[in-house]
Amino acid sequence: MAESDDDLNLVPQPVDRDLFGEDTVLVEAVRRYGAEQHLGRLRDLGRQAGSPRALRWAEFVDTNPPHLRTHDPFGRRVDEVEYHPAWHRLLQAGVRAGLTAGPWEGGADAAAHAARAAALLVWSQLETGHTGALTTSYAVVPGLRADPDLEKVWLPRLASRAYESSLRPPAEKLGSLAGLAVTERQAGSDLRTTRTVAAPEPGGPLESGETYRLTGQKWFCSSPMSDVSVVLAHAPGGLTTFLVPRVLADGSRNTWRLMRLKETVGQRSGAAAEVELADTWGVRLGDEGRGLRVLTDIAASTRLDGVVSSAGLMRAGVVRAVHHARHRHAFGSPLADKPLMQNVLADLALESEAATLLAMRLAAAVDAGETDFLRVAVPVAKYWVSKRAVVLLAEAMECLGGNGYVEEHGVARFFRDSPASSMWEGTGNINALDVLRAMSVQPRSMEVLLGEVDRARGADQRLDAAMDEVAGFLQAAAREARRDPGAVEGGARWMVERLAVVLQAALLVRYAPGPVSSAFLATRVAGGGGTLFGTLPVGRRSTQTIVDRALPA
Image (tube, helix red, strand yellow):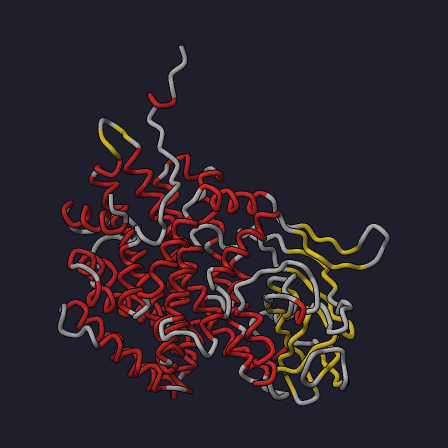
């Protein structure tokens, strides 16, 4: 007689959860940064993200990747990407949750960016392919400020809580999404080699602004079905940014030839595209020759979302690992009660909490207008958190044993998706070099970052010693830069890593319980423990406390 499934050692599905309410660290951060009025909405979103229906949406978009349709049956170019219906359900829910440009509107409350970051951290635990369109629709707004007239037209559309997937004139739609088409084949991060050109042609069929014709190719176009994209091209006055709509004001299609969809390591649901521009209409965004400055403003917000999304993936991995270990028995007791597994889970939880604290601190800094702090803290966090997500999720996957390596359990998808944040808007080297550039061009930004860390001084000797170490290194680097810039560049990764860890430690000392901050200081700051997860030099009482804080039983 066959055994009943109820008699087997099977783990229940992690469904019908409140992914916000059960995250103590995130709830505390929302309260800390003055976003209490958003708690109800965030709990609703947390329950939706943890529902069986939303989890199925995430599975559907991953197993049914988009399809490029270049022509209709009669041979006319259409250049459309067709997505599974679940893709539109996810985007619709994200737009309704305010994950696009709403926090930038004039009437937004003082903690709007912190509330949005908390929502994105929750929603990213479902699936991150579709969140790219939400991120770019949020991130382009600082660039729109280069032209107040265009900002007046586009900000309300990008901030709308209504989602429409159809290609129609933006003025006729209830809401719009934005994408980015910047990188070209010959370069990557060196945007000065851009070959796309823009020729002025006044009176084009666009709603407002100075119109141009653009010709060239873009190697990576994120969210190619967006209503408008920010494109970089050479105008007569130098590198310039343009807004390029898919549909023109007269209802005709703009020339936007989709050549191919990328097949990437992860994020199967949201493939980037290669696009060709041929006398394509665009409206100038900012002055000619100021394109890189505009893109810098956009990149800062994109990188911030990379930190938040990585923290969300890390949180998802920790939740799945703890859930599995509590319900799976081996050798007479739950895995979560085994001292070695408990150490692994606690170590993962430490890393996740540090990432969440840092992500929320950055979002609160946007609300507070702390531009000097953000100038250096964002690339520091982007460099570190996005890379730590990859190794954390590899370990979380192993906590599920062989099941973790099976796609349908979800952790494998989180692992596949995790490298994207490290690659998008600057690899590790680019972010490390950006920190060096900030030290040289905007030295006050580093002073402000060190001042943030110094707010925890006196709480723990290990942290105080690390602060002094970092400050000494920065002073030496500043002197060395005048003599041998190459030597400083060679040590940039060590410096940025140490800055990130010390900043996380300072936040934990201020806001986390003693067992959490002490374990982090012992391993990440003082060098105790080992290189891999699961080597915390603390007792079982501490590891149990850390795990229970990560996911209350």
